[in-house]
Image (cartoon, rainbow, N blue to C red; front, side, top):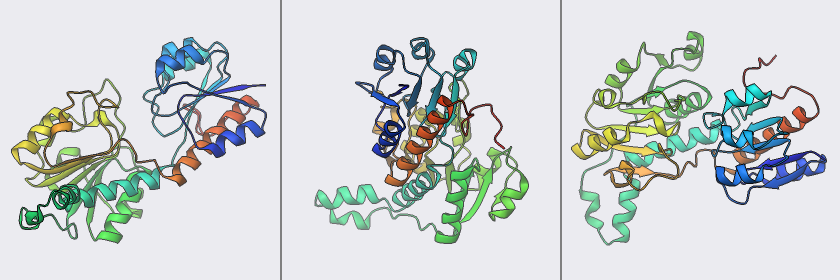
Length: 319
């Protein structure tokens, strides 16, 4: 009986599905790489979420044939080491794009209307909060999307058709016709985008060794009162620089679902940043997205174990 080792909880529908197909399912005792290394053993397959699966974990799994990523980003998986061993790495492409887009819009509105501090004010008896600095009406404002993949396209649709925002985007590898199809203005570079927008939202992957997309220099290009959103990768923003801009009042608010270290380290600058809203990487945490991602991973595992090329394998062209 083949064995699938799962590093973190996934939707139970996928677990039941794997077991019904004759796969033994084992769960890590804790969502840590230490537990994964110690417990992966003779597993034929691994399903991992944001924990990833590093080179030492791969080395601890001599029979491993597939690592299925429960999400679209494989930056925490040692893809190179897996390739050297002939281990297939897959992604759950677009399974969570709508859910992440909806959270992006939720963060936009919460930041623009100061929902969290308003709630805290009412609970503390500060009804006078309503007379303090007002929020921002987003209708007619310019939203800049950094990256224009599936998530950003959903965000553009909701923001433009639902909220009446002007939407611009920068993405060097997306064809021109895609921007035209979605009614989004393509800008030539990131600096041009940052100079124009009232809200910037990040939707582009960043690797560990790359500089942040929003460095101190790039953040300085934003107009006073702009809002920064990030539901992409925590490493995409220099959070030291972002905190400094928030403290200075140059940036009105920041709403982040991702941080450079997750869970955040004790001295993470954003934990004490003013006018900031933080959520614990919940972009894909809806019943619908979790079910789709888990079932996609389960099917990829079954396909690989039966000798088929699974969908969305890294480095494999899909027909």
